[in-house]
Amino acid sequence: RRRQQQQQIRRQQQQQQQQRQQQQQQQQQQQRQQQICRRQQQQRQQQQQRQQQQQQQQQIRRQQQQQQIRRQQQQQQQIRRQQQQRQQQIRRRQQQRQRQQQIRRRQQQQQIHRRQQQQQQQQQQQIRRQQQQRQQQIRRRQQQQQIH
Image 1: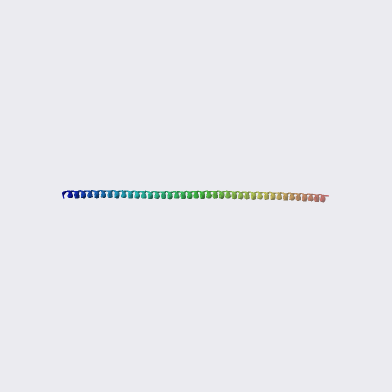
Image 2 (image 1 turned 120 degrees about the vertical axis):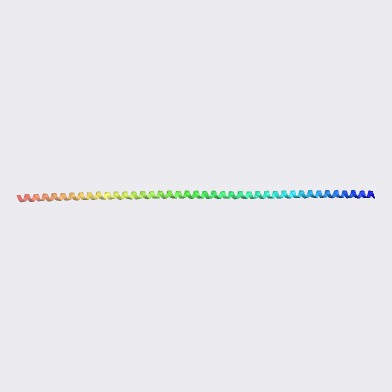
């Protein structure tokens, strides 16, 4: 009996040991799984972060590009305005020149007209003098005839 009892006790002890070992193993496995799960989660988070960063960078690039395009457009507009202004200035100058030329021509014409008038007057004066002279001559003759 004692032997039997001893054997039973041993068996029980063995069983207990086995159970403990199994429990330990299970615990270890659980821990491993948990670790694996955590790693996976971490990886996912990292991936998400990377994606977000990439998206942000892309957005920033787009914004920069748009800004550049706007600046270019503004510059072009400015250049066009300047050109227009220059053209307008040039036209105004041309118009001014034309007016001045017209004024000069009129002045010249007026001068010519005056000269012509003066000439005419002079001619008329000459003709009068000639007439006067003739009349005088005629009178003298008449006087002489009377005297004779």
